[in-house]
Image 1 (cartoon, rainbow, N blue to C red):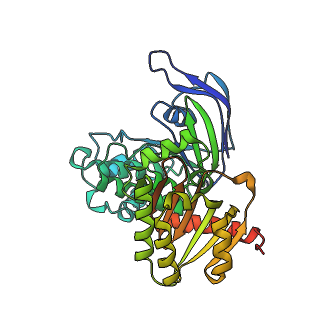
Image 2 (cartoon, rainbow, N blue to C red; image 1 turned 90 degrees about the horizontal axis):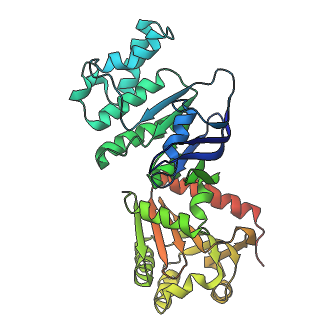
Image 3 (cartoon, helix red, strand yellow; image 1 turned 180 degrees about the horizontal axis):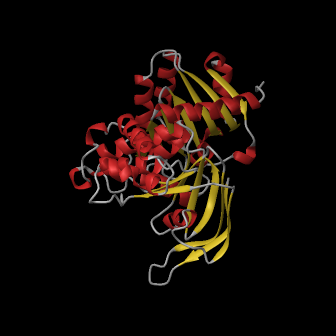
Length: 375
């Protein structure tokens, strides 16, 4: 549908930025979230795709008739036009739609996204979240093939941010093709088909979202995700052995009796080490509450084998390829996903989001079905 090949766009100056030798393809109906530090080239990538910037090298290929619409954090609404006039200006001026048809569609979109009462309001009378949703509607009404959304919540407070993220989630469900620059990790997990991670103007990772957030083999990316997740309302981070132990004991206490914890990516006895002396209390409580582990693991440690012998009814293990091994795993239970990182300072990243839990559960089920049962 859309493809960049070895594209370079650089700037002059102290903080030059830009993109260098970037290749990216986007398929119809796909949602791609672009992550990376400030200055890594994310915005330049989208501006080149929108042809707001012209590449100095490389090629851009679109299938016939593919149109893009670009929305940034700056809203760019016409201050002298009211909401309805802002929305219908482009499709009527370009003769894409008759005036009456454009008005009817605009009113339907305003109603859908909770803004019908502001049809006659001017931009200065709206909140930041309302202006951003209007900017999205203005882009949607032109019927673009690809929506390019550049950090459109970065200037909003948490409540307004949620309203805009909800609109983007709805668009993803509608099947819109989108490339989204965002710093909201839980949002990226819930909507993205792919994650593109950029650094110093280059794409250094481009892979399915669940795989990106499950693989903690790259310490640099892992540190970025942990740091930025601290500012996400749906994410909590627990670091150090003491917090690691306390988290797991609290988890068992709050889970209903007979629950199942689904685990992918365990690494032998690596989980038991940070639990230390608290593991015995954990095991007693887990057995008493009949809480099962279903694990797709790289390898079994001595403790895993002992549990399988002593309590086979509570422990199921299947192998996964060693090529996928990394110093982490993830667990799914209910509407919650946790990623555990077994480094010098053990870390848990907890995400409470039913959409993300569902995505991770599908990934776990695929691993489970493609793995043979351990004897």
